[in-house]
Length: 262
Image (cartoon, rainbow, N blue to C red; front, side, top):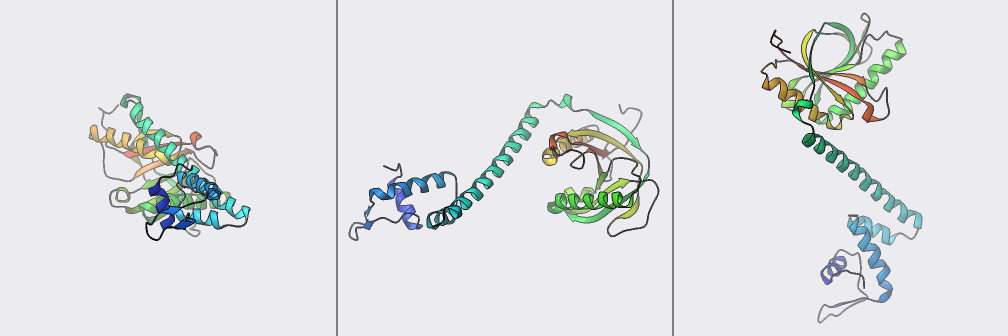
């Protein structure tokens, strides 16, 4: 009647989801009544949605419909979040498989030293994204509040140790006209000159590791990589566009340039 096997019914009894109406003490057989069918069907559907047993119990035990609905809605929200992650992972995988190496455009660039305001700290790799979001927001907020002239796109410097060993120095900065005194974590600094190989990443930062891989492969293959922090320049980001697909980030790898580079 319910499309639930004997094994499943036994499991639901053992975990306290669906108590049989009667159990034969001699044979161990479980007996159910027709009015338990709707409850069994609800349990089956909730479990098909991978709802944890404890939450299924909460749904079944709730006397108030609003409480039941809130538990179910919270689980559905989690499923949608996981589904979004799966879709993002699928899109990234397709991008890896379908983008030919020749389609990756790398340019060389010489950048001079610039004065800037920045926030820099030693950061754990797992904390990098929330730290980056907070530090960049604080930096931009201070620049706007002080009415400081900005001379270029904001950016970031990330030490190789951060990626190789899971902990290293990260700095976010905004190029400014002249210097100013330190305010909180925001301090004046000089972004040094550098020779860079640059790849433009378009879209969300979720799959930016793919662009890092392509740029790193290029500079390694051409044997032009040198020690130094990698750079990012945020030409268009969340401060400019709500849609991540519109974001534009330049990833810059320090390189040795010679007349043969082109």
